[in-house]
Amino acid sequence: MDATDFTRLLDRMMDAAEAGDGAAFAACFTPDATYHDYVYGPHVGRAEIERMLVELFRRDAGPDYRWRMHDPVCAGDTGYAWSLSSFTSTVPEFAGRRVVIDGISRFRLSGGLIAEYFESVNGCVAMAQLGVAPERMAKVARKWANRLLAEPRTLAFEAGDPPGR
Image 1 (cartoon, rainbow, N blue to C red):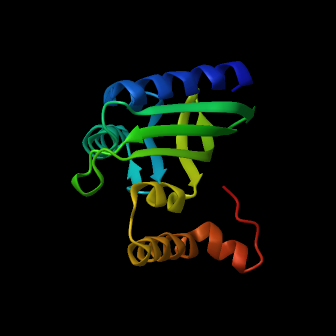
Image 2: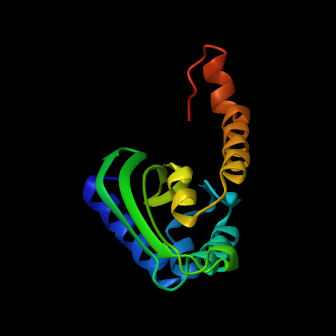
């Protein structure tokens, strides 16, 4: 995939996410793709990716959700982009609180679509904006740390092997 096609794919993905269009969002992914979300965990296949966007993400982020990718870079079957997203929480405990998050996304591409999506986001920044209690933030951060430490790529890295794809 070249940089122009990658940018178009990201624009389609962002437009669908902002519109809450789960089918259009999922269509940006291969049928067996995996979307690794830092809050909701991994989702495999278009149906699960669509469900994650509509039933989980957009449910909690509300109708004013924005997500834009910037500075996309693509080399063959790998892409990266910096993103900004924002929303007003609809989660009852945090309803009405505005959140702005930046992150880096990594894409494994296949056949002009996303085969695997990873994001690196400092979720504690979002939780601080929501007013999450420090003890709860620590619990969530431990969960994220445990998830990272259990990943095969991390285990390979720690064993001295290159993590691969």
